[in-house]
Image 1 (cartoon, rainbow, N blue to C red):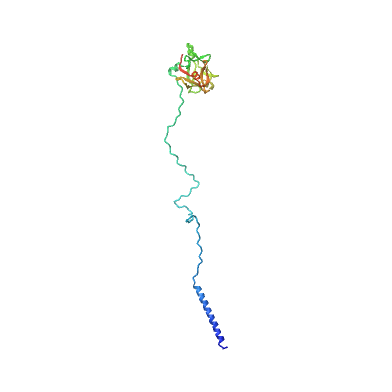
Image 2: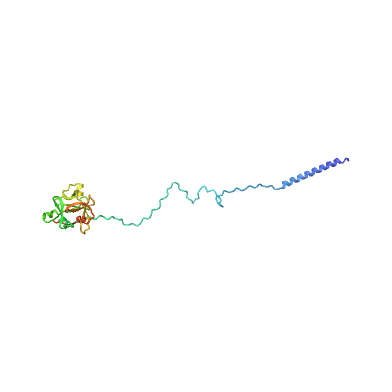
Amino acid sequence: MSENTPRTRRLGLAAALALAVAAACVTVTALNDRPTETKATAPATPPDNGPGLLSFASPSTPPANTPAPARNRTAPPPPSAPESPAHPKHTPAKSPSPRTSSPRAAERGTSVRSLNYPDRYWHISDGLVKLDPVSSAADRRAATFTRVKGLADARCYSFTTADGGYLRHRSFLLRAEPADGTPLFQQDATFCPRPSASPGAVMLESVNYPGRFLRHRNFQLKLDPYQNTGLYRSDSAFLLVDGLA
């Protein structure tokens, strides 16, 4: 073998090494010239507060023209309704006052005549009041009374006698007795006029026994409970006429 062989081999190796180095340099240069890539990140998704709407933080203080909510404040009362036009007050009708005697009747007193026995009058006989015919002067005086305001109710009647006593009921019988000043006597001597079915006549109801009326039975005056009969209405109907005495 010639002496140039080892030298040639060494030159070939050197050349191969130089080529390798040059290739590596080219590769490094190429890598350094590539643009650097930035890894993309997904954008943050806003909270979904409704279709197509984005929520924003509420302002910490209300706008200047918005009144702050009232605390512990009582709502003002609603406005009162307008007053209606004044109407005249309704005044309840007063109970009709009993018919008073005319001046002449007051002077002469009052006699009480039966409606269904027109010739008979209230007449005091032995302390009791009966329905009797009247003829003598003494009978006329015993059949004449003074009609005054009721002792227990001024809207009603009481009847005084010539000797200062009163007609009162006791045991439901009508009699003449002196006044004793007790409330019971005042009530027993008070009778309230009620309309009668007969024109001009009255029925006399006891003030302390409502529903009982003076009526004659066997010509005796007494208090009897009301009966819806023609006989009762006739027996309890009386005409207040001028005194006979």
